[in-house]
Image 1 (cartoon, one colour):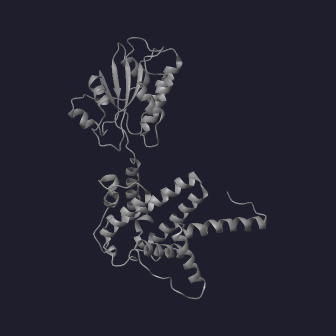
Image 2 (cartoon, one colour; image 1 turned 90 degrees about the vertical axis):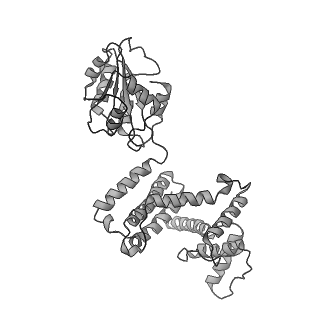
Image 3 (tube, helix red, strand yellow; image 1 turned 180 degrees about the vertical axis):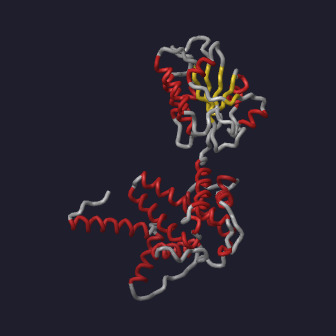
Length: 365
């Protein structure tokens, strides 16, 4: 294998097809490197395991992959329905539908021939294990074995899997297929709180899982919206529409990144954001768009922040009771750049630990 191929194998992620992992195992077992290696004699030929990603459109292959396919003495594929086959035929590449065992494949390379094997998306564990055994036996002059990724997953490729899985679950699961936007609303709140807790706990594993649960809510609601049910009272939209709207918003609100505007400080960025948002929303009041269903301290701080950002002179309402005192504290915290909700949660967690200590119960990690 080349240095580049070795690097790709070593740094592989869960987004790679199963074929990549199996082929990499065979390559490791064969002990191949950047050259022919001590066990590769002249004339033993070359086996190229050409892997592709099902998340990339069939026919879109790297240039080294096309070079290997056109230069090969034989191209083998056990799956007659492999999605790449129509495009290979169109490109003039002759493919033999054959599932050779490891020894046959090695013998097929005798005389310096090159054989390209196109595994299925699930790989060919039997073949790759067989190649590894032959290489490890030391009794067979092995061909050079190369793992050649023909197509690569781009960042975010696993999101395609998520959309596909969500679509199937929506169609086939009795519970999921009956859910509505309203019926799911409470779960979005629960998952958001669990995400906050994972962040506050500093637990990376929990953070990763809870981010996934929040993402599930987005994909789930978008999948429901595709159906355009009467209770929604609006035209259907998809996850692609959601993403497109978000991309357009981010680009428009970051003119210092995607345009000619200048922003040297975080405060400059905040001003850009508020200015472009005001143009977009055309709100009659600074309170428009503030969700009243959020926790009380967060709501109070949000309103105080809108007043301050809008340059309004609005005195806090005078009144008796803890509510008005909390309102004043939240407004003061916001003015000082402190999130009162986060501050109170941190204090409450300290209080919880003190309670557990008084009870003789170990503090939670």
